[in-house]
Length: 236
Image (cartoon, rainbow, N blue to C red; front, side, top):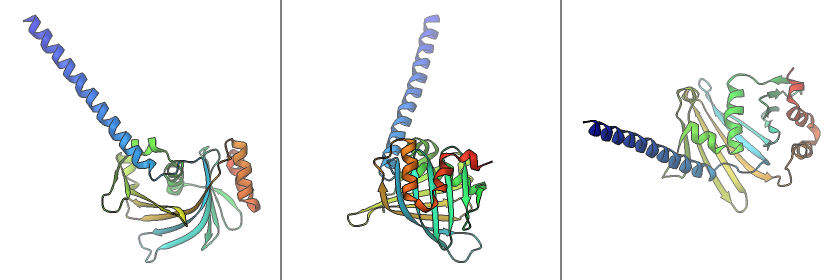
């Protein structure tokens, strides 16, 4: 009787161990597959510049809101998102958890609310190519018909803000790489961003080099670079 119980206990323990081990292996394989899908579409460089075209569709607004501009991303400093059409406005997102808005008159204010969250928590991670974050927080698949990579949030918290993120990459010998990022929010508002004319800064390795590179790109507005380098001084 005791031997039977011992054998049964050993069997149950072994079965539970195998189930846990199998689940871990499956989860690991799924995460690996998702990261591979992300590697195909997300940037994988530390510092680069480019241009963008953005279209927003909002409830209650009969026409799409369109804007053009240029940007700089640095894994050492952060992001400069400079809108030039139809008006001048710049968003600065530091890696040190500070975000700012600069209006057409050069006035600096802290970035707040949903815009700050979407820029710092989602868009910055897309430009960073943070595969681990998206593989952990989203279910990722590639659509069979048009080759778009879809990211759907898995946590209830994330679902409150985002329904789906769609990413596609187009490579052309003449125009280079264009990234198309579509973010559909839970409230049915959407934003589509085309990123193109990407130029990688292969010589930028340190934070000091990133700052000098930023000043070279934005020579007439070097203050933006200073804000990214020392955001605490401007956030007081």
